[in-house]
Image 1 (cartoon, one colour):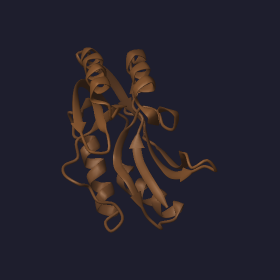
Image 2 (cartoon, rainbow, N blue to C red):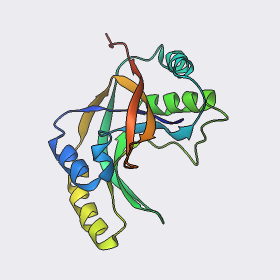
Image 3 (cartoon, one colour):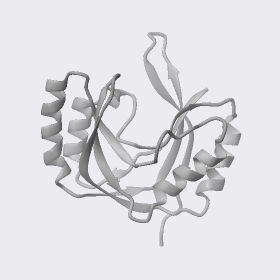
Image 4 (cartoon, helix red, strand yellow):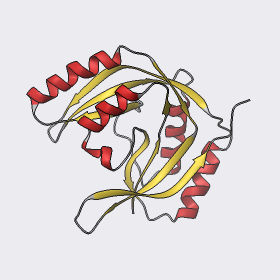
Amino acid sequence: MKRVIFVEPQIENSDEIYEFFEKNNPDSSMVGIHICLVFPFHSDLDSVAIKNMMMEVLGNIKTFQIVIKGTSISLEAKNNFLFLNVEDRDNILFEISNQLYKRLDGYAYLKGDYNPHITVGKCLDLDKFEKMKIELERIGEIEFNATVDKVYCKVMQKDENGDMYLKDEVCYELEERN
């Protein structure tokens, strides 16, 4: 099975971000605004093993705050990406990701360093991409506060038309911070 593990931060005053995401990210019909902790990976682990692994990693972690501010890009052969930067001042996302990758050794591999971000746009056309980038830079100047309270593992599947969709597998709710 192909899976992905991520969080969907609860972003305050996020209308502009959601509008940009829905307009410029073709994946918006499949998934909401999210931060990947483990990028898509194949495994034959069953749902119980995935849930137990997540419980081990997340058991002592309480809801936490992040800040979304600034933008970055990645120009690649298959697509060009626009990101909103995520400030994880306590490195909680990094630690969760690191622990999950360690436990998924043999199934999931991180290429490079883990850098939490939100992919809000994708586009191959460089002229259109440049216009999207200028629009996003204005949004990126604003500092958005967000709460992380759940971690999801979803199975990536294709429907009868060959379109990708995400099927819920595990949703781990973090304990409220006192």
